[in-house]
Amino acid sequence: MGFALGLTIAVAGFTATFASAAAAAPTEIKLDYAYYSPESLVVKRFGWLESEFAPDHTSVKWVLSLGSNRALEYLNSNAIDFGSTAGLAAVLGKANGNPIQAVYIYSRPEWTALVVSKDSPLKTLSDLKGKKIAATKGTDPFLFTLRALHTVGLSRDDVELVNLQHPDGRTALINGQVDAWAGLDPHMAAAQIDNGARLLYRNVNFNTYGFLNVRQAFLSEHPDTVARVLRIYDRARTWIIAHPDDAAKIVAESANISLPVAKLQLERNDFSNPYPGKEHIEALKAAAPILTDEQLVKPGTHLDQVIDALVDTQTAHRALATPVAAQ
Image (cartoon, rainbow, N blue to C red; front, side):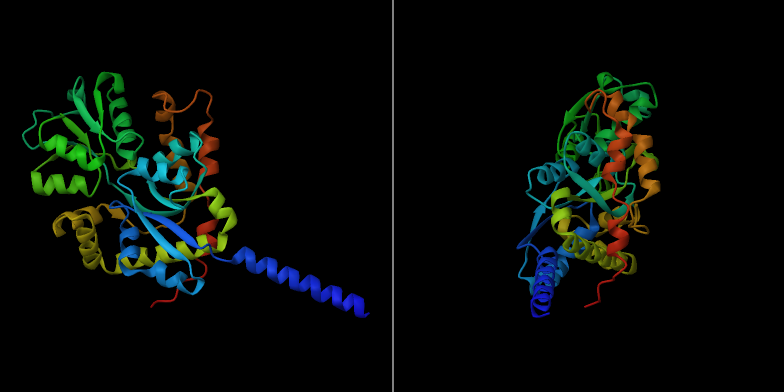
């Protein structure tokens, strides 16, 4: 009896120790912040993650992403654990071997359009044939451009795509170095308000969702930490909905843009649904053929399978069942 009792206690102790180790937070969490992800700016400004993980002695490192391509590069190289991207850009990354999961929707945006200068003679998509278009390769604006061109029977071979990061694309447009630019907010909103730029082509359905992605290895090793991070992000989401003017001020100050520009950016975002699900999967599957048509993925890639593997429909639901207490 004594031996059995001792064995039971030992097993119980081992189980408790194992469970504790599994739930333990990492020594560091690395996240990106991006001007196109308002939640990231709010969380960073208020230091909510630092406060959340202070009792665990976990440090928080923030890395600026200027576009989905940079966020995906940082995720792939382990420079960050969480990265903010557009949905279709995440599909492209996953299809090309980036081991990520999309675990949260930070917005349903209309954050990209094809932009021309205020005095541009271009009036229609067809007018872009033979023209220079600035676009950041591997991002939603780049893929938006390809999809838009396809609607009028054009491909990337019919235009000259100039690979510039989003802020540089705006500068190139304003300086007359390109004929059009695949814009991204807040830079696009700034070009409209500050430079009188005009949106040549808009299509909200060609804007894919804002995904918060996590490295698969990090999710496997630290599921409790991922859940805590998502609860903080969701706190920021609901705060933005309740405090739109204050949120605009944070975006303006963080991105060094005017308050009217920040307000225009936020007006083009729907923050109502944070849960990755069927609607996002269907939207991505509808958009994915452009990746094959433009030979952006390897021949034979089964993009529907890639999308099913990318979009995690469970983690956010489990995480947000336990709300973070207001501070």
